[in-house]
Length: 190
Image (cartoon, rainbow, N blue to C red; front, side):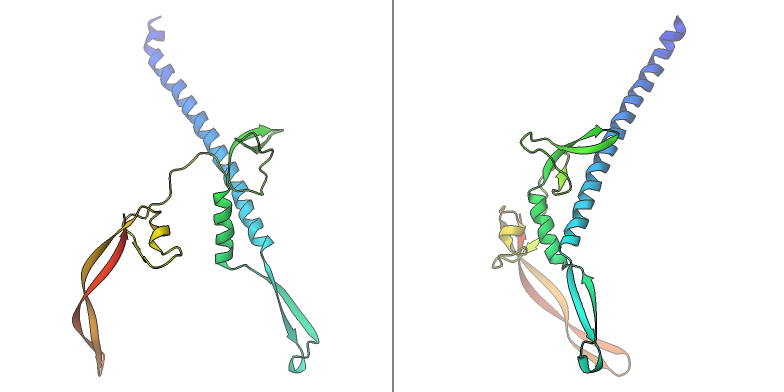
């Protein structure tokens, strides 16, 4: 009887470790399933937006023979599509069906997820971690202060910087520069 009492703590520790391992394994399976789906989505975006380029061969470009090949879409185009898809991503949970792991939308109004959408398991925090980055107040794109600072605002800072200027090359192998003091005005995200 005393052996059971002494070993009870050991049994409880083993039971907790089994539960932790089971949870970790389930989390890893869920994350792997979502990552595989999102990877496939990314590959399909690239395939759907590939272009075709051709070149003629022959005497003075007579086009006796033509060679064509597929080209990758521009990085910017793929990025824009993925950003739009990210904004419309679907929250899912993973279900095992017929021995396979499949994604089901958390929102009951959606019937299927498939590889037509980016998916995620948990809501994540805001990724607008741009505090301290410099921005351009007059620009409207991604470098503009409104977008980069996530509408949190910005401060104007004045910095005194010493740079090399008036550099001259002296024969052989010597460059001589002056130290110039410069005042820079920077706009920094809050």
